[in-house]
Length: 424
Ligand code: GDP
Ligand code: IMO
Ligand code: MG
Image 1 (spheres, rainbow, N blue to C red):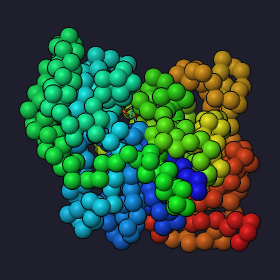
Image 2 (image 1 turned 60 degrees about the vertical axis):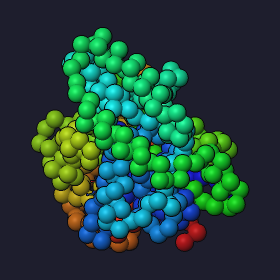
Image 3 (image 1 turned 90 degrees about the vertical axis):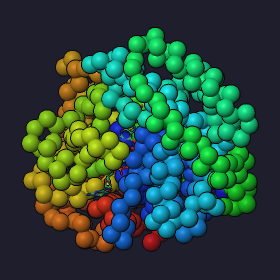
Image 4 (image 1 turned 120 degrees about the horizontal axis):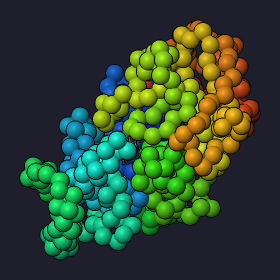
């Protein structure tokens, strides 16, 4: 069997959590491969709303196994709070949630360092989620990290050494902090972690594949936040692209099957950094209000703009996307016209590829199309789609040279329309 990968094509918050939940019945296993509690994946069903940060979004569907892979960074305190809230609402995790021993631990001092580095950057700050993501991945790559497997042997000593090293850095930055409460909750989180199956997830996943089981890999963040291919340095610290599923789970590249690319019918970004199609006018505000574009983790306002096909083509290329899933189409229901950016003007020259630097001087070139002016939120089949919406989708499909297979018309699990395929 192969694994399918589901990932964001924009700057995160495309609606990955919702789609993973919808697709989970087709799979035996769901696995997160990168990121950490910087993610906020929202699911809505049966009148309930859940926001998942470290736990994969397949956790609500039956008895499916959910794996937190080696590429993820885990904060035991935040994990405990998230898991306990789920357990309190009747979802048993202990047997179904497996955690890689190779996943790196976010220490309390990583969170403090995240804040200290951001403060030191001043106006050039990344606008991180403050969850210690950058410092934890930095320690991983510089071979100083602590892993989940470390909690099982000689942990106190390893923790003390890492903390002392971080304290030295914080001292050199003259950064004031109080670690007492953070550390107390973190230590409780470490104890709590021990009740779960701490596994060699690369073995587990490959054995499952050998046994004919199907696996869905869930990405966090989005391609434009990828540390290599995103809008560097305004990115996260992991590989959010499809290849991240290989390194973050121990799955070989030739085991990748379908790659589901998730995009909104428009575009958003939270935090600092370039965003060529950002709207600073009433239209941007309207999209934010209708789409409830506020961060699931931080509550920060998301910046809003039109869909950017130049960036999407690039994202489709680096991920090998085989099918597109378009989210939040309903948010554009009331607009007279909608726009899609088809190329950039850089110093007066029109280009249709994603350039090295999008930090300055990019002017988006738009195609404007009639809006559909129809409430799509109660639709259940593509037969009901208005003509103008079909025209918008056909335009995107032809520009992006990739089919849109699922259309989402609202936050609820049920508000999801799977389109016909040739064999239907
Ligand atoms: P993720 O991080 O990619 O999982 O996305 P988030 O959960 O951060 O943000 C997506 C937001 O849009 C959440 O509040 C979802 O409940 C909501 N959402 C998802 N799909 C749709 C949709 O089709 N229409 C509308 N209106 N909201 C949606
Ligand atoms: P999901 O999985 C949107 C952004 C932050 C910041 C940058 C770096 O919900 O789509 P970090 O804390 O990772 O060091 O912050 O990345 N960012 C996200 N934006 N959705 C996310 O996750 C994000 N995770 C990080 O706002 O600009
Ligand atoms: Mg999110």
